[in-house]
Image (cartoon, rainbow, N blue to C red; front, side):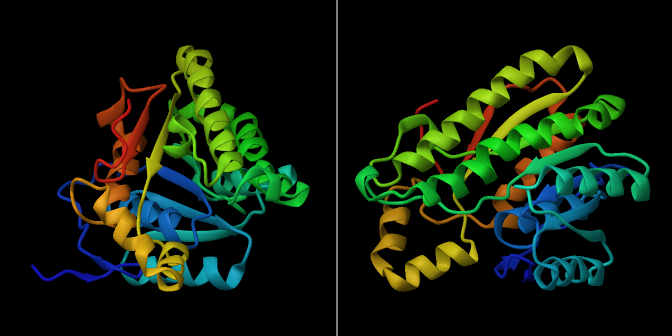
Length: 269
């Protein structure tokens, strides 16, 4: 079977072998592009109705239209995750239009605050913390009653940097470690409510990474060299199936975990 061009901009053939998420509804922050869109596409191909939440309509609407052109169930909702009222509006509109919410994946991120600590600015940290740590808290408190009603799944996007640290991005590592600690605590708190809470730590070829590699071709070479499977992952075909797993019944006894999806580059767990 020939692969077709997927929404992540790479070759994609992630057609489901079974509708593992039929009847489920998933909301993905930062769902208009990159890994967020890849995960949403994979879930939609397994029968979910996906809602792409992003700040820019021209990106999010086009992404949702692309999925609908495949015959999938997809829509877009505006959501700046640094504004709690917009998270509330996105969740409420999803539940109102879809009748339920089974999975929220918080993927949106603004800024990586790269470089040594002495070069960081308050603005760098503020943008990173607002979209990662604070938004994880806001997403969690807002979505809890809806996930409790469906026995749903809450997923945070973290990073191996949050487990092993990063000399190049120490602030990013701190934020990602905080998200992972938050997920582990929520898994314990929300388990009696029937809600599973997990993290995905991916490395995949997003538009942002592709741009960075064009600027510094050695970056791609270094990433591949440290990856035992010998390639950089695809958002829909490699990260997407993990989102499908965590959103559905196959992971019904999995909570408080971080699944690293990077081809084996990080093996510290």
